[in-house]
Length: 128
Image (tube, rainbow, N blue to C red):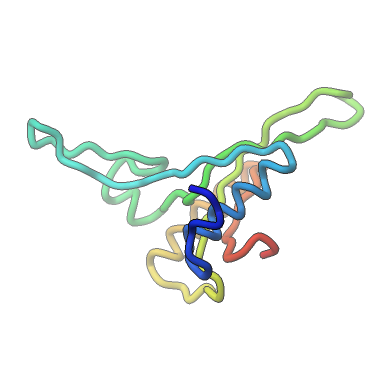
């Protein structure tokens, strides 16, 4: 969806702005939808990262945007480029962390990605 078609002040616009910002530096971000649907055989099918069970999804919620950021390695691997895992949880402008169960589960995913050397965080506008 073109940026100009998205309402100002909404989370969808923030997500598109973040995606465009990352693209300018060579990175790629995709929307990570998370949920569960029931198939034709009445079997629940879970989708999205870190959503293997209801219990897991309660404790850890993967970010809205998932992608890869190109990183140039230094001396020991001169000239080689690696891909750094990226997870961005987008929020509408003006949002601030309140510690709700949902936000805490989103923070748990962000902290996991950071602990493994990835790039992750909340974003409520490109400069944030």
